[in-house]
Length: 170
Image 1: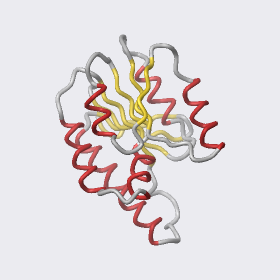
Image 2 (image 1 turned 135 degrees about the vertical axis):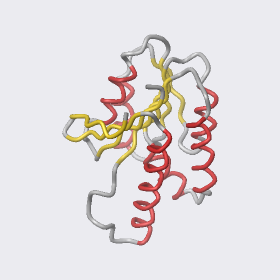
Image 3 (image 1 turned 180 degrees about the vertical axis):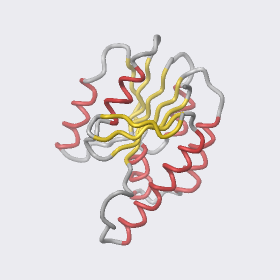
């Protein structure tokens, strides 16, 4: 398995599952974080996630420039773990960035040959209620399309519910 997408709902265990997969590999591990700490609660979440990673991990923060962060972190690492695509997409949309261009750039990075394993974490949003606002519906739709496009390129896709992984592909 060289590329993998881990999907799930909020608090499903998808990030923990991605860490478990990554930590089975020997060598340097690289975490690419897309979250931004806009408030104290989010800062606390980020701190908890950092505490889950041991000294083998290095971290790059890439709330917008995810494709460049992946390209820059590939050399010398056994694993690149991106957590998460949902926050990255949210950052792009709320910041008024070109989502199509950024997505194409990300897909190019997913398809590029590399020695490091590439793991993505993303939320599956299509199982819940229809969002009330136009922006919410647009975000849900964009997230669904992004997940489909990444899933088509990676070698393995898992869906995590209640901490239990279900293999969808690979």
